[in-house]
Image (cartoon, rainbow, N blue to C red; front, side):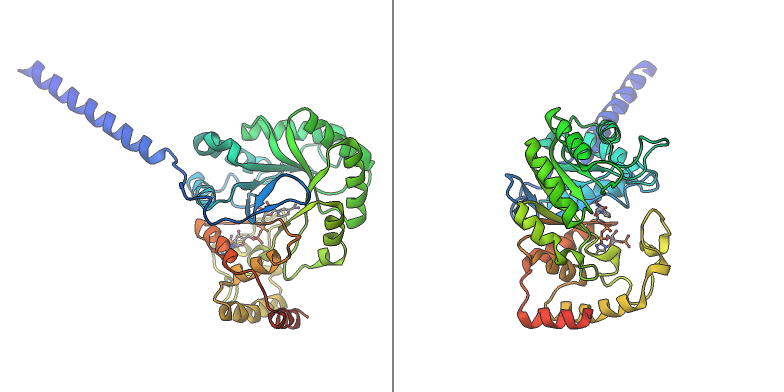
Amino acid sequence: MLAEGKIASQARNDRLFISNFLLRSFRMTYQPNPARYDSMEYRRSGRSGLQLPAISVGLWQNFGEVNALAGCRDILRTAFDAGVTHFDLANNYGPPPGAAEETFGRLYKSDFKPYRDELIISTKAGYGMWPGPYGDGGSRKYLVASLDQSLRRMGLDYVDIYYHHRPDPATPIEESMAALDQLVRQGKALYVGLSSYSPEETRQACAVLRELGTPCLIHQPKYSLLVRDVEEGLLDTLAEEGVGCIAFSSLAQGVLTDKYLQGVPPDSRAARNLGNGAIDESQLNPANIEKARKLNELAQQRGQSMAQFALAWVLKDPRMTSVIIGASKPQQVLDAVGCLKNYQFSTDELAQIDAILN
Ligand code: NDP
């Protein structure tokens, strides 16, 4: 009797274990939304064959060691489910540097590996990464070593786009571009890009890359309602060169949303003093907040959130391939994607915007 009872209770435990295991596996196995391609818009990058989603997601902030993996997973799953096929990284994203690529690598392994051919993953090198003369800048030594490290952290065989993150005046542009070309030939990157290069540097780099047979795919500059330098030459240069353009910080790290209109929320980027280029309270310029307040009124008249308005304004230009947003919550990704419902602006609206900005 005793033995029978023990066997029955063991069987019950086994059944419980199996059903819990199945439940956990079911909950944990990511099944992307089958309708993920229904509403996203994809734009061709310059004169290349590659199309990018109009909204891309970047991992500069919110994917470091301090961020809970579950929250990072929610953001990436929400994005992919909404048709965001492009995730933008760099060797130094974290904190600490390298951590965002490691976070991405963990989530890639658990969630996204079956969908590798549906994803465009970029990384970059150009800022300081490791001690000594070979961990910064634009030398072949640095760019090659850094991509090998990035691939290891992300658990990838190749990235789709590899960027030189910033120009390095101390290195001949021919050397940096030859390194990018070499990495494409080795199969470690499919395309190459430039970030924060001036129009003149962009022309030089594009000429070298064309000569090498690896045309520049895309340029990644800062562009928002508050930072408009690209309108003074870069956008024209890119159009002439047949290179795409993907903007960063188009929400001015949150200033061009409604979040700072009533003060500084404790969970906002500005309140968290993250360092490494992230906005802090001292950079919340009252003049810019006032502009955001007035722009928010225009956004409301258009039936858009302030974030949607700011992103739509960047995407109104057909030379723009995509906008990379940062997100601390899945809802912010969905809000951003909503901007695609209306990125047309009347002449009158554009004049009102310019009047507020000037
Ligand atoms: P954004 O200007 O999009 O700012 C993102 C932040 O704005 C979020 O973290 C969030 O802040 C807030 N936010 C976003 N959406 C909303 C919303 N709907 N409502 C309210 N608040 C919102 O971009 P980032 O400056 O983060 O840059 C985006 C990406 O661009 C980076 O991840 C990186 O990939 C790339 N980049 C490239 C650079 C380069 O040199 N090439 C430099 C910088 C960025 P909160 O935390 O307060 O919620």
